[in-house]
Image 1 (cartoon, rainbow, N blue to C red):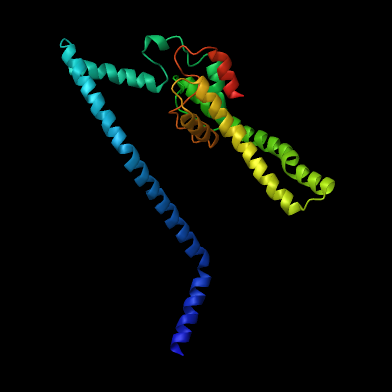
Image 2 (spheres, rainbow, N blue to C red; image 1 turned 90 degrees about the horizontal axis):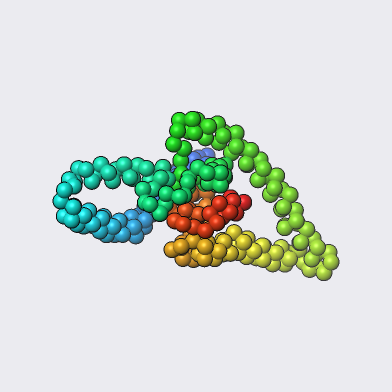
Length: 251
């Protein structure tokens, strides 16, 4: 009798706090997934980082040995300034001096990354006025972009979802369930091809040193608005038709 009462009270307690238990499991699952990602990224990327650090250390030591008139402190100051400028998209290399970060086409591309919240981080405002304008521009532009995309999707979705299913159902007499499944598969294939496979193939041809995987990775990172900034199109040295290329990417 006591065991049945205790069991029923436990059941009632669990049912009363079901939402709390579900939330706790959700938090635990999210934390475990976060830790899982950290473990995988660390185990995969840390060896490459260590090799790069060793290579740079040897290169720096060899440079100091070949240029004995230059002290390590002077080299460190120069490298720090170069890295600081590089973080703002300004390169010290002579073959990169012709690529301006704030001409019209580059600014148009930057504005599109701001409004889409992609934010590659390869180019950032240098002046206080530019930073202030970027804040105001984003506060107004991001909601405007969401409104614009919502309106576009609402118009497109009628033509790519409902009408094809109704057409094949009414015209050819196919079952709605069968048509819906086939339509979902075809639509998924077209979406993946148009937004990932075809652009990745194009970028792998137009961008130097980009293979198909790197191009596909860039497309995914961009369209998911993660925008890590490790791959940015149109930033190659002496790239032909750079302005036209930037406008095409923005569109």
